[in-house]
Image 1 (tube, rainbow, N blue to C red):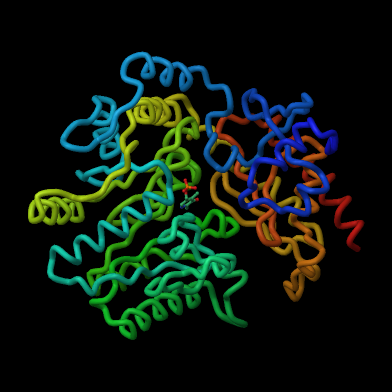
Image 2: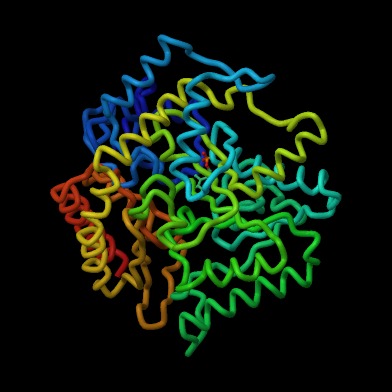
Length: 455
Ligand SMILES: *Cc1c(COP(=O)(O)O)cnc(C)c1O
């Protein structure tokens, strides 16, 4: 609970830190949680209280908070070459090795990689790549971007325009030309008597109708997360990507998989597109790419887009884009180690091994009359709260049901995330059965208390 002394961590945090994506009434009342260090999947605050972080930080700290190999890789690279850019034909050996590695582990037979500092910048850059292709290939009108309602693609002006969340209206976004299609959430969006397959087909028809209405030659690309993350953990309806890709191919529109959350193991395979059995034209990676130990994003272009971008760059003598820290040698060294840790130290295997227990825990809690559905894939899961299960009626937003539950979890020493009227869990890949038991026991106590209070 908050310490109101003028020199307390809580007061100092309030005084000088502008909180982003933070429920201000909660933080004013309870105080910010100020952290000092981590131990495996736990973080510890300035008061010495330990929290099991069932959200892996922000989906990304998949190897936990004290992995010695990752810290050592960072230290070794800081001692060799602590920073460099990737402009003017100069780049670090780590950057060369990471690009090679990313193409090797991608679903593409060959391809090319470009680096950013974040997932938002990677999506932004991908849009600029598509616009660049439009310019070079004589189709400058190909500028519109298709995404879905509830999609999360980031916060820069372009990636926020791709994000399909209502809060972006406070910024006057989306920009013109960013179009949001129906969210492929069958439980919420399926119509009375409509089968899941029919729902999927309806969304494919909606996509085609939108392409025709807007003009196929005005559309630069379609972006999708294999499983929507910040939209509330929404796996696609059955056959969704096959149906969508068929339509996109008919019109020559690239499909970009935003694998910022799904990539590197979250769904039980290296890529979410492998879990859903499709091969996109490009992949966006970030978050798990460095296991959260360095800010970094990457765009992996498949063979066709890589060739087209090469040709476009030849035409102009360069691809005029890049960030000062694109391909940062320390970030690349950490990413190389993180990929090795996730793929070869048994982390993905652990996700697969514990997924049945994770799902069983979610399913058990979903028996409660105030939980409308559980959903998830691999180590990403959500519980959707409802006031009335039969009619799927949500709670009054004023009740702030998910914030109350998440705050009660904090009291219990568990970090989980309120999202809309859902609670999201995405634990680090290093957890054990005992950690899962701890997560579900604490969450159940918190939910039982809060549901009793709100009646
Ligand atoms: C987090 C996220 C982003 C944005 O990444 P940042 O590093 O926060 O800019 C983009 N896409 C998806 C799917 C994400 O989850």
